Image (cartoon, rainbow, N blue to C red; front, side, top):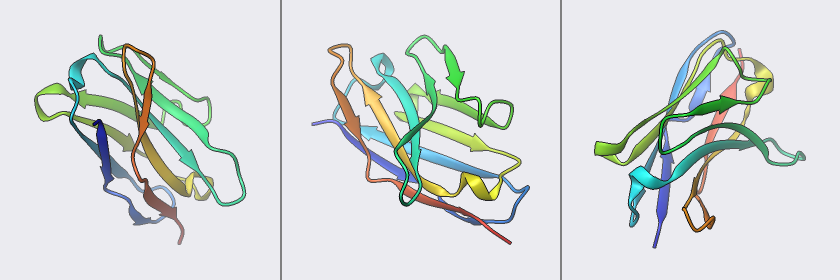
Length: 116
């Protein structure tokens, strides 16, 4: 019943910024640990960031200092603010929700392309 829909992807120049959104439905959003992952063609899916129900955050070393994950429980939405984007950030970005039961749910992804 949990459904996640990502949005906000697109084409951006190196050094630019982009803000991704993930809207959740069919779940008590506030109790979910939310995460962002990404996958480039030919590569394995890579964890990017997570934020717990209590607001604890963590980031992959590759994005630390450049990306910020946040959540708005009133809107059932999690965000990923991406700054100082690099070509190697190009990937499909996926939203993930982990329920207290440890079940995970995935969105369909949104394409982020960093290119001049």
